[in-house]
Length: 133
Image (tube, rainbow, N blue to C red; front, side, top):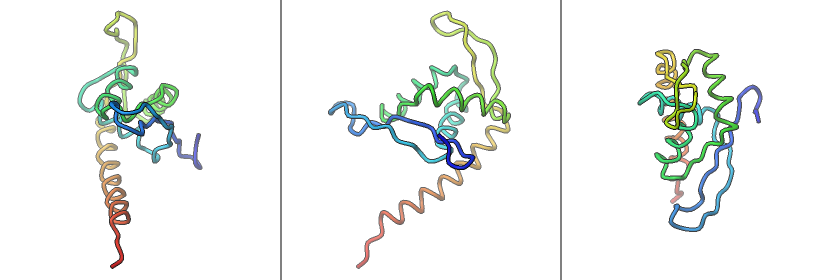
């Protein structure tokens, strides 16, 4: 799905902690959310796509589950834009796979996006905290 020229990715969000009921809801996150999570994850270590899906799910305490149908098109776009590079590799199960790594351009892009996200989050926090006296 796109809004204008900006792709919107589907991410499954758990409504309750994993210890409670297993109700899930598919939500569209803000444009760039998946990109930020991919770049930040790969900033720490190169990974293949399925490892990225597992990493984001684990680090978010099972609150975010990236659909592979959203992940792989995003990875391909980020490769074309020079934010990532990839090489042939082998998975832990011995299968051929593509290992993704963030480039210097990707790190610069991530830092810019994190700054923008911080400002947006600050604005949202202020609106939610507003309480007319």
